Image 1 (cartoon, rainbow, N blue to C red):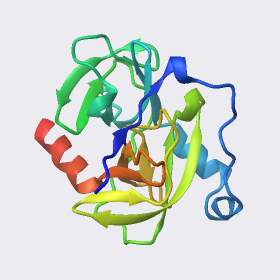
Image 2 (cartoon, rainbow, N blue to C red):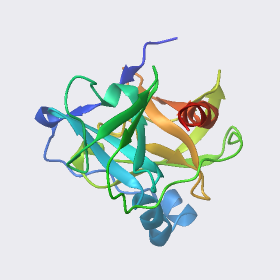
Image 3 (cartoon, helix red, strand yellow):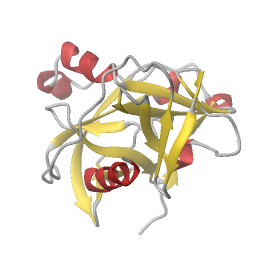
Length: 196
């Protein structure tokens, strides 16, 4: 299998280009109000000059889930420009906490999404709030593979089904920029259970 690369956006790489618009097909599947309801749970995660995405998993505790490569334990990590505390890390995930979290959490889907279903990924692609991309999902060894690359800066952001439930977390992009690898919901659930 080809090597997949984490897709963290460096501020120094930002280019003055606009994010791609939603496709016509996506517009028929989701409404602006549906997109807005998911976006409320998406947060910006930064350290030094690097930019990623995370999403709220427990508002009462101020918990935000992101990808492990989106943080450095030795340097300050910020969520929405607020200093965060690192609650737990694994080789794949990082759980952060900030006080006074007023955004709603996203729920995890209880089962794997079937191969071939449409999913939508959210994040701070290219440094904009928000980039929304539609994909077709497939599975291999518990990971989700998406049929197109996510934009730079979307690492750590959620992939949701059309009911707004999280089915994966953006993790890495093929160096040829032909697909995205994402962590599946089972692995996310196991990580969060181990912390709680």
